[in-house]
Length: 118
Image (tube, rainbow, N blue to C red; front, side):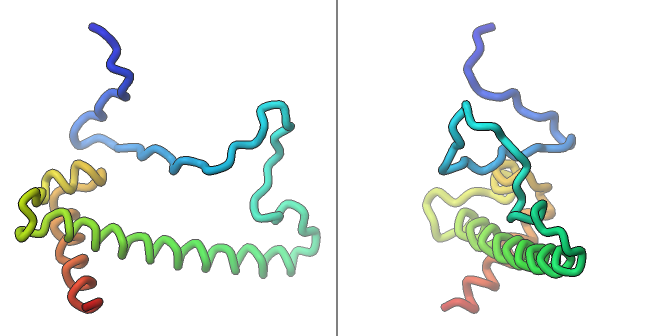
């Protein structure tokens, strides 16, 4: 069988691993790659390290929460029955790597967010 260049589909019901987001900047290949995480590795004062790491954790959680809201709004838009190309919840679930039950909840949450936004 010829290789289509696409990754094989994960088994239904099994874990799905999402591809990481594309990077807009790739470091040069000949440059030594060191671990850098928001310069936390360079902070030697434990109190300052705790403060900065906590700030980052709170910021990442807020970003994750906001991203979930955008996921929900997009799911609601994709499933909007007013669209000629509306997707069923199962298709939204498959596209996002969710269960169908979770997709239904996200679609409803997204509809609420979109109503509140108008």
